[in-house]
Image (tube, rainbow, N blue to C red; front, side, top):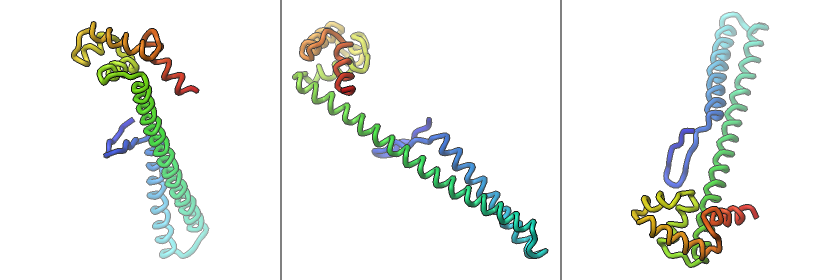
Length: 166
């Protein structure tokens, strides 16, 4: 999925939306052709059954264009609502994590280490990312687990899953 980043907003390009929009454009071109052809035939030969059928086809195509564009608008609106809900949920989770870290009295360094642990990083990765010794990270994790009342990384992660689930 392609994403274009704008300030404060992520805009996604859904292939389904692109397909529906492309079909609507093709229908609009076809309808324009039928209208132009019908007008040319009326000017040359007058009104006939053939021209009436072309007019009906043009009307159906224009209706398809209108419905297609309406569907594109609905799809984009739904996608925007999903993106907004995800952004709210992501922000709410980050706030919740921050509150829990504050409740446990984690220091800034411990909060950073705890966040890496929640993301699934092991001791070596956390040490590398923070530019710290593995022993320092192990000691920080021990203090974090004690403050959170858990025995390890899985317990820490499960606290947040429990909060999310109920």
